[in-house]
Image (cartoon, one colour):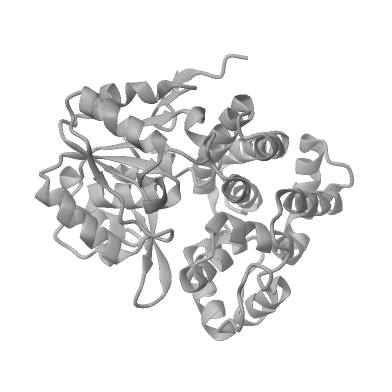
Length: 381
């Protein structure tokens, strides 16, 4: 099968192995002459990043880099990045990496022309209309993991380091102008990152599928995204050079981020505050809490997951699906509990309150209350 293509949904996507060589052309198509490549510290010195910078230089676009990005990017990273961006007189961003680099890069392009503080654009009601849309700079996104799907997302997750809360910053123009999805860039991912990011993609698809909101297009995308993860994540985990599996996982990541327009739920409502306070890997945290959340939501999702299990070739309906998640986590080496993930003496009142404030709660099929959310957190420990 030829796993290459030029897609226009949900944005312009250049998909296929080796297509990073088109980075300068993609930047020109987005209207950039002096982009800033934004990535995280771990990627800054890797060969894939150096190669991309060399390609930008060869295309006459300079080779500027910003990599002061935390695993859970915060407003301090944003402020530092804006200073570098303005000092360099850049006119666009190449957001490069996993969720942290992609989210921070998108936020810089969004914030550089705004005159209101970052938190004024949180995904609440119509707050996004406060932004000056004409002042948002262009974005080219290049994912190097297969999980968050931020390359096709209309938002970024930024941690407020003072309140220890993850905030979703939203605007329709967060959606990058051009995306380059090159599975060769994901080959060097360590096993645990392959596992965690892959389970993030699965969580996006699963929660979108189970959300009670009406969105048939997202429903179909979510179901097929789960199938791609089921069939390809174990392959990519076992053999990182399996380009076919890597390509399918990149597709699944984009599908999850597209599908969760329908809604997320308790998996993310728990994972966001846990990550903000305890600095855990987001996708791995999603995987740890996934089975307890499935059991929590069982009365509302049993029928839907019977259908999903049948589509995915899993025997036993809801219980078979639940067991499959446990087996997949075990295969990927995911810790069984939050305690095993390294979380000790959690502030249950704070985490419960923060989970209830998270916008993901609105898409959970079972209403989340202070009592049942705390009980759910306890079940994850």
